[in-house]
Image 1: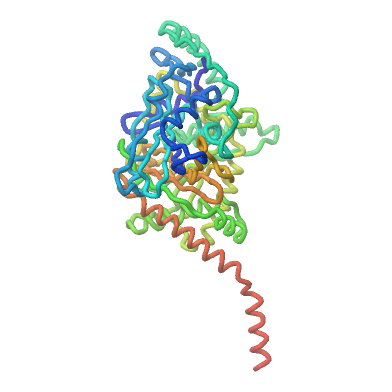
Image 2: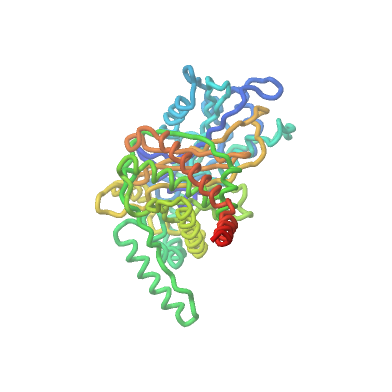
Length: 506
């Protein structure tokens, strides 16, 4: 058995009757493989079954510790019912993008069954363009963005297929009894004071950088006091001064408690255009992605008459997974907090501001412990994890209380070559993430071949139709492209030539 880390367990604790803890990927494929076989649930089940020995997260089943005395465990369950996990359905005619998005929103609005391995795959037929969509749901307790991409790389091929691998028998673990799990919980209970002692020196000075609690009353004071102590201890050794995050989130409609229901929109932009903007205006691809999101949110909020005078604040998940941790799955993430200059009118100035703030945020992020999110959780006994998560949720949307951020934006690098599912070519791959109390919008971006694929998820009660937000993102790209084209025009030599002609004619 493998015990969940405190960060893994947090994604379980955050779930309630309104918040889901899974992440998803929506792939759109050709309807048939290169050999002419239809892409259906039977084919997907066969692919998964053949590669099940490479997919431990598809075999893991939760084993809870009685009374939540310690974090849960994963038990390798090789006997699960694959027909339950891989399902098939069809859209009604005409099967356009909005209908697909509505179906995806319904599926991601349902929690995964904790009595089974925490994943599901939906094969969706009836698309207007003749393609087949495949939606893969995986719980965040088992995978983060990088390890989720590892799972997809096992399921998908970079050619029209792969040679059958030698059959490897999966050995199932015996599911533990309540008495055995109670013994593990009591042993874990004894080690919890040691966890706190180990976590204190690294976590306490940076509590105001922990996204789930940084906005709570008293957190900044604790972190500030811990930094003063740490600075005093380092004074004689010339230690660098520490400073907490001062990014705040103005109130928008997204800073509220969410409902159980979701809305989804997805679309693609040209990666080549983004790279041209990046090269012309001297920044990074990620800067351009953030500028597109900033422009889109600015335009959409302005049309609603709700644009704050202050810049928005964003959570940006960052992987801290080392090369040695590849294939270990679970969560190895941190979160960077940065401003989105929605208060800036000029698109080029807005992009340069993002470049500057991201450089500062990255420098600060590098100074934070890689295990910060996990260490901070050790101050909450596992038995109180779920209660603490619910208490934090109740504070989301409370007027007068600072909120952690306005939006979550994630940019995940993907493959630059075509992928195939059992021999069926993948046309597009859209990320579909989740929302939280107090952050009712999530924009996740994934590169695939020559495109950047945008997936927008919102709470249905906060935004009934996210497609205008997607349109605003496209308009933000157009605005940046026009600005880059104008910046690339060699206007200076033309002006000098005109000045010399005027002088000769005077």
